[in-house]
Image 1 (cartoon, helix red, strand yellow):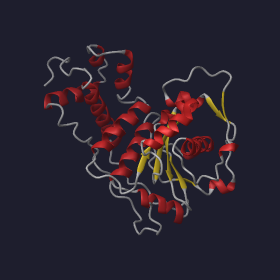
Image 2 (cartoon, rainbow, N blue to C red):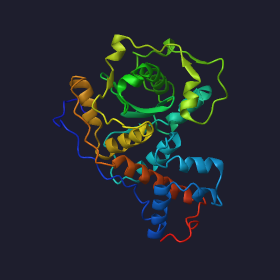
Image 3 (spheres, rainbow, N blue to C red):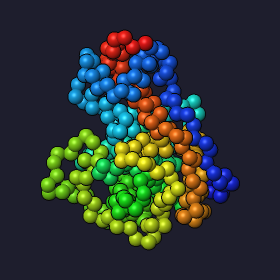
Image 4 (cartoon, one colour):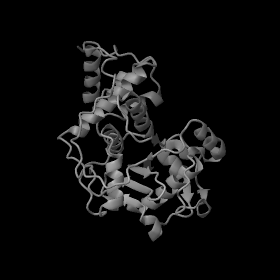
Length: 317
């Protein structure tokens, strides 16, 4: 249960150095240097020469290179590794919602029952990375009996994508009720929402933004009593390019979990003026570049377990 009293903390802790647990101990210094070289020079041939190479594998890893956009697999893969290896977890019960879950709407009842058996129901916080075609942002739901709240963290000027928020709030509220058994979302009744495939849609793909774009939500507006439950953190980190939005989502998830900031965020949503939230800590120069490199190294090493060799760049020490 999240705290019910206003917290005293008025500022965020400093941004940490993000190093994926256990990854650096899994490879040698030479292999690490090789990966740094591959990343800094965007050597796509590193993967093309691999015995494990495939178009899917190549794309999965090379789109982590600088100036590329990451996708749901990167967010899910890095988060699951990072979260499962943290020495200390939040005191709150947290549930990450895979952004691909919307693909399972045709099997909703079996999925909901399965999630109940796996203990995914009744969590304090649900975290949902969202892709509004071509752009990632994060929705956090604080599952409280009386003052349940949605929090939106948007790294691109909120006016650019604010028109998309109602649709995804409705989608998330629907998922929470149909899959995770959340009972306190009377403000978003299921009988007011209908999902309908667009007439020109293709077969649902395995990428979240394409799958979501093929679903049209009939009820996609928010009434005043619903807007009271929705908070947009307008002092959140702002990206300075068109390709780091997914990294900001991933960084926010890790940062909030590492410092157990759920209570702070929730209490700000409930007790602070929506235009007076404390700013997220300033990111050091080149921080996102370093974070992207860490994600690349982590996911490459994890893929190495499945057969990608490190010794295909001769002469690297």
